[in-house]
Length: 79
Image (cartoon, rainbow, N blue to C red; front, side):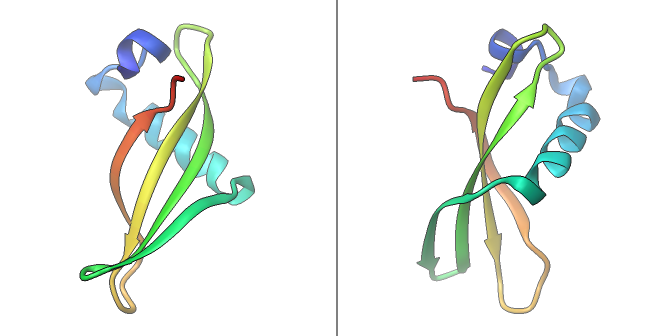
């Protein structure tokens, strides 16, 4: 999905990581949930693709106790 929507492939993971981390401070949390593993957060960030397209990407995070947030499933949010 990332390749077709944004021109981002596995080898571009550093680019995607940087795009996500740069966008996070200004992004709003769309949803939260309590799980047996910790608190889950869903945050949508706009990602500029390598193909010139910009798409919303849903990032999900989990915080377990006092550990730092950990990225969990992430996908392009195409309607």
